[in-house]
Length: 106
Image 1 (spheres, rainbow, N blue to C red):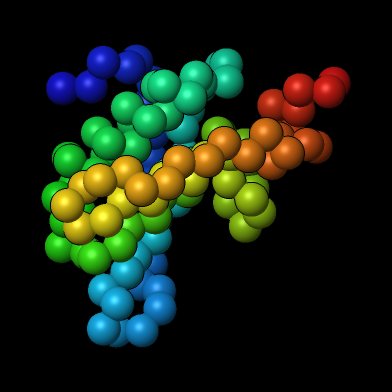
Image 2: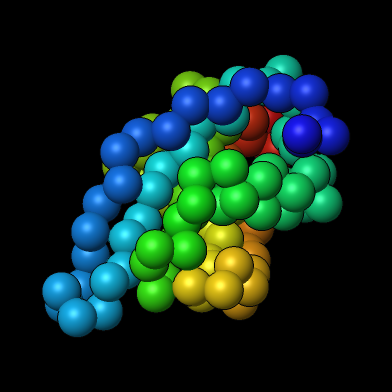
């Protein structure tokens, strides 16, 4: 069970790289009224990994966007897992908010 109280939707998995790499990415849209803390985004990433049994892949990268962000542009958060579910990399990209309703400089 998750210990955060926001909803999200996922876009389809996308196979990337060589077939032997067994690597996928997925975009996730979070419905929220506020910018979510790094800690809660990490919890969401791990929850999503566990709930979707993504250990079938050698590498899994999750791109997290807030609602109304363009998913063709940079994600606010990037979480990368290996096949054991270890969160190898976790990045917050505040510059992805520029020009959105989430722009911190408005």
